[in-house]
Image (tube, rainbow, N blue to C red; front, top):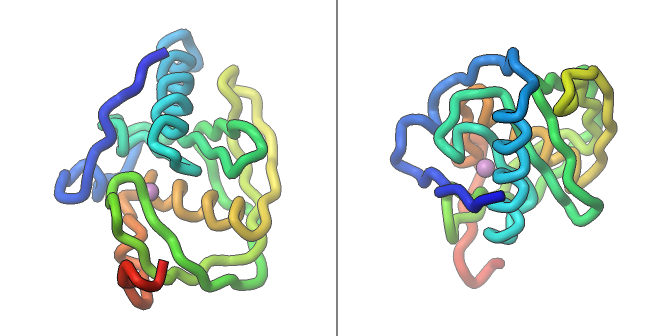
Length: 153
Ligand code: NI
């Protein structure tokens, strides 16, 4: 495993749409392992393909309950609303208030290509939305209602 460089705000790759993953091979497994290690080393709760310079529909998430790997994920159901502070490893030190659904169901493939569904509430629902946005070139700052000052964190 290896820690990869995290792409920062200002790099146009963060604003591009990702292509689906088609090959579920060793190269993908190394990428997933590296992304999880990179996310943990940076104390993040999620990381998406473009953030390591790859325009592929790959996400890793860990809200403290273990690593969740999502390949070619889609939101298939959502409900409710939450409004809370959000940040991003590509925007170090920047936080803002973002409204998200309180419940989200995602359908995705695992590292072997097998389809599965997973439910998330609260922080996990927020992480699903934030990371899936990255796959369509959408960064959280475009959804912020109000940026937070350092004294509000
Ligand atoms: Ni992010």
